[in-house]
Image (cartoon, helix red, strand yellow):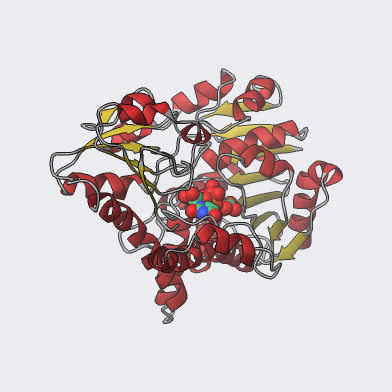
Length: 433
Ligand code: UGA
C-alpha cells in the first residue's frame, strides 16, 4: 500500500520506518527541512534503538521524506502523528494537529479516490471532533459517514514504549481500530495485515472516540499502578520494609501482574504526565473530577522531593556538589521530556547545591533545559569529588559502578531507581526500599 505519515517525531518516525519495513511505500511528511533531510539521508531524527537501522535500510527505497503534501492523494491512508502538547491547565493543544488535518484535507480536495485519514496522536475524546472538522474544512466536503463517502476519519492509537518502540511495533499486545465506516476498517486491516501475519494480536474494532479513550485508560492504569506501588513504597520505607520484595510477591497474583511495579522516582516522559493531565482536564471539562487519577499525579509529583529530602538527611546541600546520574526519563532514550531529573535538579539547586549531571545519551537535550548546568562526560567524572549522588534513571551502566564511588568525598548515594547495590563504604538509601 501507499501510506503517508505526517509528523516525524518519536511516534511518526517509528511508524513510518516500521510500515516501510512491513513492505508499504511510505511518505513521511514533516515541516522541518532538517528532519526531512536526515530521513532521506538514512538517519533517524531521534534516538530509538533499532530505528537508525530501519531508516537506513529503507530510505531512498520504500521510505521517502518530504515537506510537501502534494503527493498525499496518491496514497490510500494518511496517519497524523503530530504532537499534542500540554497547556498550562493540563488540557492538550491540538492546534498543530488540526492544522495538519486541514492541510491534508486541502491536499485531498477535489479527488476521486477513497482515502482514510487516521489520528495516531493522542487526542482526548472531546477534542477529536475538532480534528475531524479541520479535515472536513480543508476538504470542503463532509467526511464519510457524515453525508459523504470518500474521505474517512479514524483513530488508531499507539501503545509503543520509547526505548523499545521498534520491537513493540512488531509485537503489539493489541491493535485498536477506531473508524465509523466499514471500508476504513478494512483499509486498516490491509495496513496491518503483514504485521498480523507474523505476530498474532487481537484487533479491537470500535469508533474513534472509544479508541482514544482506550489509549488514555491504558496509560492511566499503568501510571496509577506505578503511583500505587510508590505510595505503598513510601509507607514501606517508613516501616523499614523492602518494597521490591513486596512487589515481587504481589506480582505473583496474576490479577495484579508483575509488570509496572518498579517503585522509585515515578513516571516521566512525553506520555504518562501529559495523558493523565489531559484525561483529568477533559473529565473535569465534562463535570467529573477523577480522584484516583488526581492522587496518581500527587504521588508522582511528590517522589523527586522525597529523594532530595533523603539526600539532605545525609548531606548539607547548601554549597554541596551533587552528582545526578541519569537525565533521560527512562533508559534507552535521549528523551528528557518531563523527566524526573528536572524536578530533582530544580530542588537541589533551590537548596543551594551545585549539580553535576551525567547521562549516556540525553545530555544535549537536557542542556536545552538547563544550559548553565555542569555536564560530565562519564558517571565516574560526575562522581569525582561529589558530596552526594542521586540516581535518577535506571541505565544499566550505573549498576556496574563500583570503585568510581571512592572518588566521592564521603560517598552518599540516594537511589531513585534501584540500580545500585548496597555496598561497604557507601551510605546508601533506596527511595522506597
Ligand atoms: C508509555 C506506555 O507504556 C506505552 O504503552 C504508550 O504507548 C506510551 O506511554 C505513549 O503513550 O506513547 P513510555 O512513556 O515510552 O510508554 O514509557 P514507559 O516504559 O511506560 O515508562 C513511563 C515512565 O514510567 C518512565 O518514567 C518509567 O521510568 C516509569 N516507570 C515505568 C516506573 O517508574 N516504574 C515502572 O514499573 C514502569
